[in-house]
Image 1: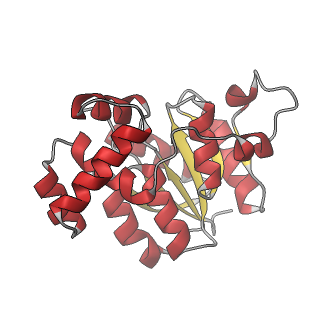
Image 2: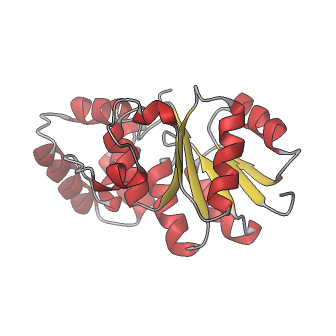
Length: 213
C-alpha cells in the first residue's frame, strides 16, 4: 500500500518520528505537523488518503481541524490517535467525520491495521474503547449523546482562551469582535455550568481539547 499517502499530526516530535518510522515500510508518509493550523493549511496540497492526528494539539485541536479538513477534503480518512479514553469524545470524533479512533497505548500494529481498514472503506475503533460495551460497534459511538457539545466557533474560542490569550487577542486571531468572543465564552460557561475562566480552561484540558503545556 505504498501508494497510500498518509499525514501525521501530533505536538510531540518523538511520537511523530516513531509513527513515521513505523508506517513508512508500508505507506507513503507525505507530511508531519505539530499543530492544527499547520495541518489545516498544508493538507489540501499534499492530497493525503489518510490523516492520523491527535485531539489535543496547540493552535487548533484535532477535532476542530478534522471537521474543517473533512469540509475541504470530503474523501480523506481521519484516524484519531489519542490518550483520551472517553466514549463521548470518541462519539464526537465519529460524528465529525472520523473513520478510526485508537489510543496511544495501542500496539503499533493496530495503527497499521486501522489504516488498511479505512483505506478499504471501513471504520476502526480500538478494542480498548469497547471492552465495556455490549455488542460494541461504531454505531454505538455515533449514537452516543454528547451532553457538553460545543459548536466549532466555541471550540476555537475555548482553544485560544486555554492557551492564555485574552478575549481581545482571541478576537483578533478569529477576525471577530471582542464582544463576539465574550458572547461565546459566557454561552459556553452557562451551557457547561462553569463559573469562571479558570474552570473553563480546566474543562478544555480535562477534555483533551487542548494539549497540556
